[in-house]
Structure formats: C-alpha cells, structure tokens
Image (cartoon, rainbow, N blue to C red; front, top):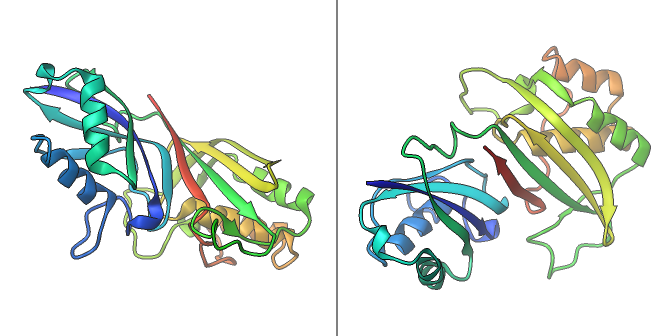
Length: 242
C-alpha cells in the first residue's frame, strides 16, 4: 500500500464546504466519487476543512492505494481531471512517505482574501467579497495586531470545538492588485471562520465602527466586540507548507 499526496484547486461556490455533509454536496464527496470512477477507493484526507463558499488554489489531500504504480502519474492526473471537471482540478500527484498526513504533517497554512469596494459584479460575485474599507492605514494597523501567537477564542465560529484556541500568525499583509484589495495571512493553523472574523474586525476598525482598543480586548479573549464573519466568496486557501 502506497501513500500519495495531491495538490488540488476547487471552486468553493459549488460546494457546502470541504468535509462530508449529509444530503449536501461537498468537495470531499466529489473527490470520492471521481476517484471511484477510475477504480481508486478508500479514505481521502485533507489538510484543511474549508467552509461553504471558500475556494482553494493549493489544498493538499492524501490517499492510499496498492495499484497506482501501474499508472503513469501524468496520465492518472489527466484521467482524474476529466472526472472532477469543472469544479475541481488536481494540480499534481506524488508518492510520499507512508506516515504523511496532510493535516497533521503541515507546518503552516496560508489564505488569500480578495476584497472589492466597488459595485458588485454578478460575474465576480462568487469569487470576490464586496466590503468597504474605510481608512486603509487603520485597516493595515488592525491586521498587524493579529501577528504572533494569540488565544483566538473570540475569533472562531460559535459551536466549533477545538482542544485549544491558541494559534500563531506568522505573516499578515495587505496590498492592492488589479483593482482589488488583498489580505494574505499565513499561520500554523486556523480555527473555523477565523480568517473571515479577523478581516471583518479589521474592516470594522477601518470604518470607525470599532476601536483598536476594542479589537485588542477581543484578541486577548476578554470581550467580544465583533461577531459576524464576512462573506466567504473572496477567501482562498492558497498554500500548505510541510
């Protein structure tokens, strides 16, 4: 039995999230169906359970199979992509050490958030989050507060269980590209909806709806001032590091 690692991209607007859900279409469910159609069955593991509407450009999965050595990996990649089209694409497949686990072996994960303050474009509505940034300097300063290790208890979606809520943000940056405002964040892990809550809180500070002091209190897990994750359409899982 061999272990394989694959890097995949997907259009999150076509799914109700990565994880399997009863009576709802998921990325994992579509992967299982596509793999089964080429004779590959068994458990598929993912590095990150993205939420409904969240996209990925470089999600990582793994699976085990005893017979894949009979395939040329390029041929297998092309074959699988015909079964997963149009909402999922495999970017690469490689054989890895037996003990590899896409989630637990990962050292960091990175997300990119695409924001636009212009009038919503129906052709981009599934791929960009429309949100108004107030003072851009305050927005950048608010984002900078998240860098480092913190207790993100008040920056996760209610009802999600984790053994602990401490996560470390290695890098967080804000820049503009092709008319879009982009936030890039890389950390050792993220809680459910954490990135959407972080960016939403920073937007609130930029518009003067919340003070930097209030943001600091929430980051210290003292008091929740900002409650609602912003729209997921512009969020992309863009890298996993090992």
